[in-house]
Length: 131
Image (cartoon, rainbow, N blue to C red; front, side, top):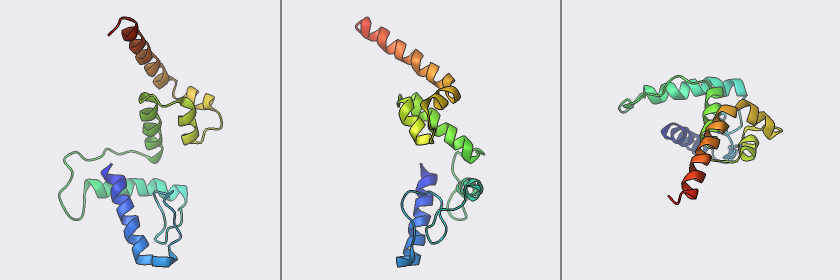
């Protein structure tokens, strides 16, 4: 969570510098220097830049565990997988991903859903056995 918080900090500094000319909302992680959303291809390159800044900061110590290389799309999959493993409804995950139909999410993440189904079976078995 340090990387997104650092990015939000940079945005807050930009907002203060720009003042009333700031055009942004809190909905976008990556924005122009005046707060407008940027093109998705630019976001992909900024993810790499953000990871590099985290792993090799200009000031302060380097992190004990650097972040591995990841594309923006990889982060989308990590987000969806984390939510599904935490038991979030497929319908909710589908909505967050922008899938028009939860069946798309079910197809793409079927392996994760099977893992949560096995976990649910274990929970049920323990409840039945009074544990």
